[in-house]
Length: 146
Image (cartoon, rainbow, N blue to C red; front, side, top):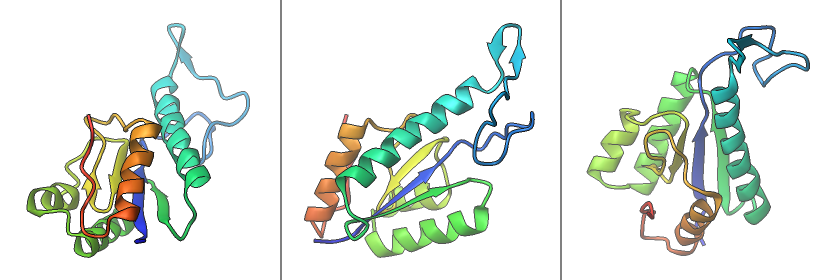
C-alpha cells in the first residue's frame, strides 16, 4: 500500500464583516438585498468540509496525507504541488496544469492530479473510490471519473 496525498484548496474570498479567518462568527449576518453576502463562500467551504470528513472517516493518516490549504499561502502551496508532482508523476499535461495552478477554486488535488472541474469538487463517493485506487495501486495516478 502506498500513501496518497490529498490537497484541498479552499475558497479564498475573505469575510470581512467581523469574521475570523476560520469561519463565520455567531451573529455575523451580512445581507444585501435580502441575500446573504457570503452564501456562496460558505457553501463551498461546506462542500470541502464534507470531503474532508469523508476521507478522515474512511482512511487513516498512514493511508492518506490530507491537507487543507488557503490559496493565499502561495509559498506553501507551490512547494507542496511541486513535491506531489515530483513524487507521483501524474504526466506532463497534468503536471503543468497543477504546477501552474490552472484550476478553479475550490480545488481537489490527489497525487498531483487536479480532480475538480471548474471549481466543482468530486462527490464523496467518487473521491473515496479514487483514493482507494491510488492507495491500492502503486503505479497508476488517479484519473477523474465522470
